Length: 345
Image (cartoon, rainbow, N blue to C red):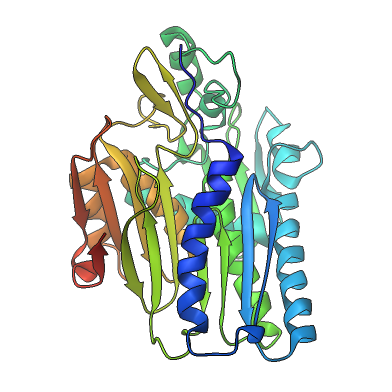
């Protein structure tokens, strides 16, 4: 068995290529001393916050506040620590009706369920039992037995969850466990962007491992130039020009293992319990990163035809999809609103 997981050093290198591209156009023909940036490992990935301001002290304070907000969201939404809100909810295996929850959990669950409905369950926040089977970050990874996957699937159903954002209450059927990892980074980016704006930042970028939120527009450039990583090679597949908002990418190259020549990655199909096939990566642009995050996963699972149909029917959403399973790209599909805004390298 050959393990082909992406090492942290490679992730950092690819991350810096894209961030450098964004920041270059944010500071072109402007004093570089106005740019302030910091990087931290959070939410299982490299997170960067970049702001443009001539006030270095204000810029530093804004960056620190943005990171504090991301840490706060992570502490609420993760299921990987025993004291988080989601962990406490998941510990109640008998389920609950009308349980009071924080505004953050209510909002994230509500937006997640909206994408679940629109995608007929291709995006599902109840996949925790499946995720726990696909331990791709271990040296001794083996493909789960079919019977074990089938048993886990019996606890996966997004319709087992209901949320009321007005009363901030949650209802979850017995045996259901929530996993917000597929959407929490996007929400954290949105919250960090909001904090930066509240602190007077007019131009900036928050990037949480490919979930990117923009503030304002780059001086002298007019648009943000976003590098789309090549799913099978070092470097970029191309560059997309965006007016702002957010972009999120899901790819089969981020966490994976190769067993007997077959790539098994972390983006699971809730209908089968196995990694989705036919797509290498999906990048989605929307106003909010929380929506882009969820939609990127949904489109990846749905595949080229149904996935891009979902994007075309979702107001304000655009996407770029790279099809294929093996070592070579099977095709690049771009939504109608990005056709004139994407240039392949």
